Image 1 (tube, helix red, strand yellow):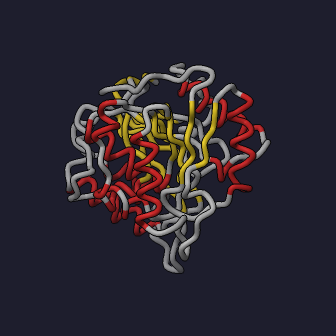
Image 2: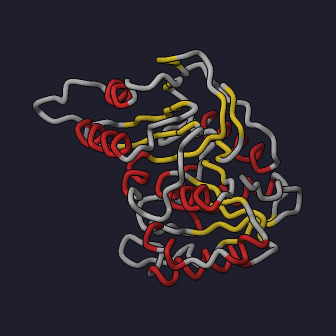
Length: 288
């Protein structure tokens, strides 16, 4: 998979909003931190725009992202927050200039749409924290430092105390994936990459357990769980249940969906909708 050039001091990072709205004040602490690491930071035109829940209209958000994709001076694009809306832009994007001058695209949650599109195109990207999540807690600091390491081409130093192998004891392969709900929503689309021979990373937030089961059954029936190098699961945060319970935990639902395979499966990777959201370089070889 093609990796964009890693960043050096003085390189330009653009911050854009492809989904929900966000203000310049909300982005400011992350911008200040990035500048303290030696980067130049540009706020895209979508920052501060508002159209209902979105950061401006579809056309405005797309135009901002397209401008940053086209600008060869921009070495990385950091999405300001998730929510919903990125999928409304992806089919109208022109990737010609990006292919000529690839750059790192960073974020998580709804930004899985762009990760999947890049994975399908054969380009690496970074699953990472975003400016909305910036604060000065230990977990936030570790998350941002891991993003900084990834942008420089250094393998982030993961805190793996919570990692538990449910099958096997190690896994190795090129890693891809993202938010389970978003990947589920991309089934049947041109943005969905092949997972064969790869480590598939999954995480999610605020889903009912029966819906989690529905999504895993969809991935299973669609072949995305076949022939993996491993299944790596991050945060399964704030899962919900009905008055009549589903009867299985989120981990049990996911593990049952891959019961017919023999590749390694691990839970508790420190990434996703949680305070500690460490960066993952999608498209890079990972060994656990």
